[in-house]
Length: 83
Image 1: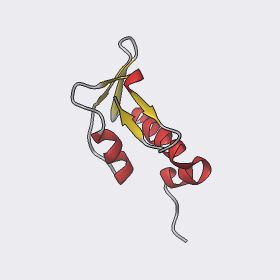
Image 2: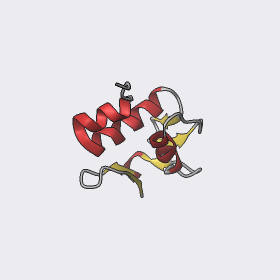
Image 3: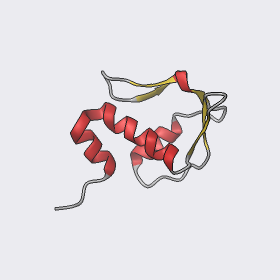
């Protein structure tokens, strides 16, 4: 049996919402997303990705960045949306 990725395990444990949250945390933890705590703004620092879910999440963040209140991880769709 093939080994599951972190994102696949997150999906199995908590569905799309959990997988999206784990993606955000992973991107922030390894420095691909930069979080300006004082300004409460998220910007892409590096665009490389290993998994399609990482590329999709990074593509949602515009060059100008997002305020932390401008994105959400939706319980109904399980998607990470901007705006």
